[in-house]
Length: 437
Image (cartoon, rainbow, N blue to C red; front, side):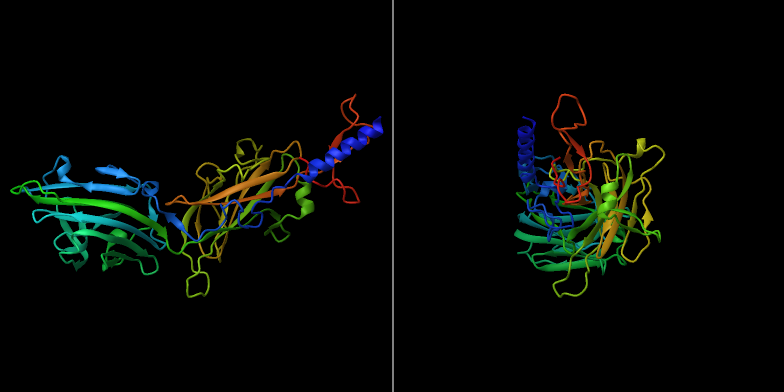
């Protein structure tokens, strides 16, 4: 009877093992077959409400009504003209975008005016030094200027517009080149630009972006039919292709540097040990002309993945109960020494990193919490700080201890059972090493 039971149990174990798929998702930075791969050729948004918020007159998906006096909205007397009426609303970016990377915004503006009104399509840029506006339609021109609260006190670029430019629907783009530190606006094919050296308002690290519409007219005129509407097309980083290169568990070499743990060392890690996880990321963008990597540095945060398909199991990242040990986070950029990031954690907001060309190495610690000897896994995501685009990586750091059948003639464990398993290393023939967790 015992022999028959042994054979039946062994057959069941073989069937179970044959249907198991070990966790090997993006173990070496490979693409995820589900479509959320670890690299992207597009980082940006086609959705206005993902990156902007505000109180326009109307907002539906990517469409905005920014001003329309005919809708009965209360008009205001502008500070610069006591004999004028004005009507204006805007939306502003939810987060700040870096001026250390190239980017572009594209919006279709529709100006519907008559001779009694002026209609203006506007972008605004706001940083720690103040705000500038880029206005198309003000005074028969497109102009970059600064508003001091009562008047425009500085102009940084201007180009004339024709009468046909100031009516109808036209594409209005705003782009930034980090290398030259040049801001360029293009409206209906006509461009104006300025640089950080000429305009202190963009001589900063990051800025907020606004989309607005403005109409004004003399109080002596009847209420005009002028309106400004906008349709958001897209915004994107133009030199950014993030990728997880690899994720692994490392240990100190004899010379003090970190090296990947061997398979034997990973198998020997036990419950309660403190391990060091190393993630390598890169901006793999390459220009169309070829050459070396030349992607821009983009601010990101390295976090634990928010998808069940990239699980973290068997690890504690909070050092509150590490018994005297503490979390240690370092970031090493290409060609630089590793730097400690005080107070950082892969939990919650994540570890702040600049994802740039070449390999950036991020290390952090974790305590193994794995009393049952199951596989220890980590799932991560790299999220950029403006668009909140996410790239994922998941890997098995420590394999599960294989289940090996005990001798049913001499059972180890609860009395009355005729078959038992204990977790041990594979036997000398290499059997019993499949993952049956």
